[in-house]
Every structure is written in structure tokens, then in C-alpha cells.
Length: 190
Image 1: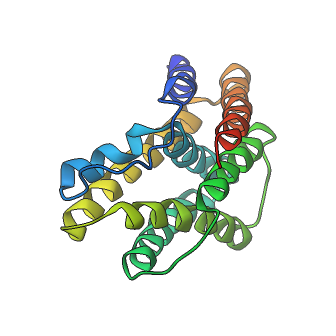
Image 2 (image 1 turned 90 degrees about the vertical axis):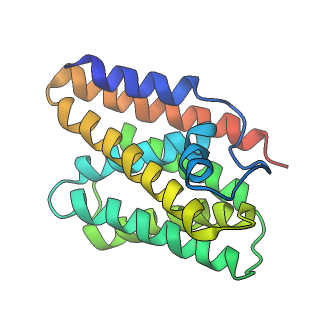
């Protein structure tokens, strides 16, 4: 059981180092579902949001993942409606760095400010999805929403299974590794 947090961390680190935000097929549920698995930025940020929500405990365990999904869909809708925002990739890279640091240092935050942070980051992840979507928005959105729920759950399960000193150390190491990977991702941002 202690192997699960290690595998989660390894999955974050070994994911494709390129951003998942490349043009391609965005007209189906399958394309939407595959999108978050296509880049380290999405994998890390989403799983870290799940990890951090469990570390936050109490109401945060449910409120933060729900906020992530809702804000992500809000960002998708904003981009699909034509809202123009610059520096989105940099903000996404920053989300990986900060969520990694929050996890590594087990940062405690009240539920509402934590939800605001999670929501802000998720909005930009969803915004990128909306910028890429061309046709059939609903199936694509349903696909990346389902994948996001799966990745949030993986992060949450990893945090729950990581009870005890060894597991806790692995979760913190995963957060630190993701933060460092986020710095590398950010260096690739124009």
C-alpha cells in the first residue's frame, strides 16, 4: 500500500515533459479524456490539488476538488466564449510550482482561501482546454472533466494511503519534485 504514493510521484515526474496544450483533435470525449494525460503540467497540478485537499483535511477534502472541477469548466466556458488572456502557460507552470510547494511543506490554509487558490489555478487549466476546443464542445469538456476527476481521485487516494511517516515523506517528496518540475516547465514557456 505504501507503494501507491511513490507510483503517483513517479507518474508525475515521468509524464511527457512538454505542455499538453498542442493543437489536435478536440472534437470528442476521447480527445478530451486523453488531454490531461498528455502533459506533465496537467498531471502534476491536478493530482497535487487532490493531494493538497486531503492534507487540508475536513471540508477542504471535498470543497477543493469540487472547486477545481467547477472553476476549470468556468475557464473552459470563458475561452470558448472568446475571452482573451495572456501568459496562461506561465500561470499553469506557476500552479504546478505552488501546488507542489504547498504539498511539500504541508501548507495549511482555511477552506475558502484554499478554494480560491485552487479555483484560480483550475480556471487557467480549463481556459487552455477551451482555447483548443474547436467543435463538439460538450463531448470534449465531458472527457477532460472525467479525466480531471480521475486524476484528483488518484491524488486524494495517494494522500489517504500515505498515512504514517514513510508515506507522508513520499507525499512531501512528490510535492517537492513536482515543484521543481514546474520550474523546468516554466523555463520552457515563451
